[in-house]
Image (cartoon, one colour):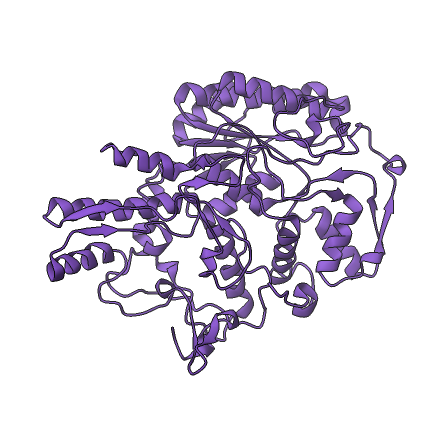
Length: 523
């Protein structure tokens, strides 16, 4: 708590009726703590033991963050306690926080955002799903070691960029983008969906006090000596998004294109795997031109089905985790309610058939592979994105045409990528549906985006899919996805708000703060 409130964002300001202060996480504030956070566990626990001489149990050992940071945090505490116990300190237990996850604890329960953070189990499905933490705790409780390729990496609390506060009045847009990106990377979604642009920006420190963590050089060394994730599709939207968010989450990766690894050539795959030595492969490459595929079925199948299968076979042989992507176009649209993972596929076009074949081939070759079906991308980094084009047209005063009778489940790319990375760390397998929660037509999707951006949704002109020109491939009129395994991505409106915020902050759309954010909701 700090009475100098000008150094902290407005949402942190509060008081007790007498005093006024900002209330934020202490470990995000730059201080001259002599104990330091990196070695703080051992220092403080030893001091406690020396002072009281009583048995010690360390509880609530869990922390907000991506899945790899959750397990890194628990390992950090566990290793400290193990070392102290070996040196005579009577530590009798270490307990995780929390078993079934928490709602809004990431905001210190100061707002009702409805943000769920998984714990040892994820309860967003029909039954609690064990995460990587569950597997780790099971091993440790039995006196066994639990290894993971990302274990040796430092968590955010050990890196020099851990500090957010105090703020300074310089470089507003640059630092605002950094803050929003970090928040989304840490929690899988923006925790401040109504984020105000009149905050002061983040104060970026160049140095840190002795003992508070690792230097930039040490961090880089650890990242460079950790086995990476190998990501295909260097020129595509999805591949570049994985690279960007792996970088934000400090997960070592290598992004490759066809020249570095041709996924249709088994010898090229072997050479790349031998060279990069990945612990996981993410196949974000693919033949994506749905209409062109009707006249190029062989080329489409070669990349989407055969290439995905060859990667799966190599990963299975090497014991490497594997993630590949499928599509809502594996369905025919006759169901008229959201498709689930167990629904039978019946694609209408060549592209959809190639993805259905890929699903079968991949899981036959690598039963532990992860196959993610998703749909209708939108995101802040793609110039040809449907919503980006729509916003640019409306800003220019033009109308925008969109189908009124094609129902989809839009997917915000940062949410998709973060959820996929968490599932990889959890060693999940099989088919998962990952889209933002909600279904609507392309026209209503455009109207909702315009409304949240403060633009005129009446400029969106809907039309029937029968009037579409230049589409050779038949498409389902209804292809909304839902999941019987767990709805891991947040609601569509939440994702749209964060998309509009990002577009404003990156100067991709010239809107005022009031236009971008509108009125702050009661929640």
